[in-house]
Image: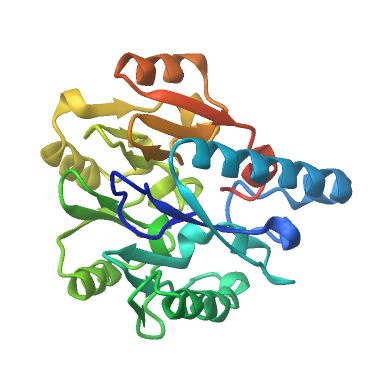
Length: 278
């Protein structure tokens, strides 16, 4: 998923989704990926992925989002994770450069998709990073509306220098956070700013310096620490829209903690996509 623009009070956010027709778990580029389980029953997994996609789209729509749907492409199964396609803010899109060779074919597909959106007036500008400067979109660069800056992950897929490029393009502050674990290879797998100002995060995913930066900028009362179980379910990889949070199936304790802060949690069974790490 990818957030195309800031939410407004009348229309809500526009969220980019990719049709899962070509979704597959065909290779292994992160510790979550289980192509063996997928291959054991491709037909059943594909059907489950379609149900999961439909459930997610419904949950996001019910939360107030509008879905912008694009098609996928044969041989590019991870296009179904379009948060990685670009960083988007103020109707401007800075497209990703992918580190894994398996995903580089997505760059041209997403460029064409964003150019079509530009032609329709959904975005005003589409730009590209220099070749070789890896930065994997909103998966590694998250806008924190309450604080008015980006949080950018680096060290696994994206490069630290890309944070500077993002800041230069958007004219906004970018706080770079080094990721410590290949298991949490994108920032959005372990860090989620919520609409009320809280941040849901998983501390073991970060280096000591990154943790110090987070704790210096976010008051302790606004930090919600995800447990090992929460992180293992990819529950931190969530979407916060107003008082609603859409996430993968969550442990009861996490749901209760979020509800105690006034959030409504909508859970979706995303097991087929978790087999690919997203």
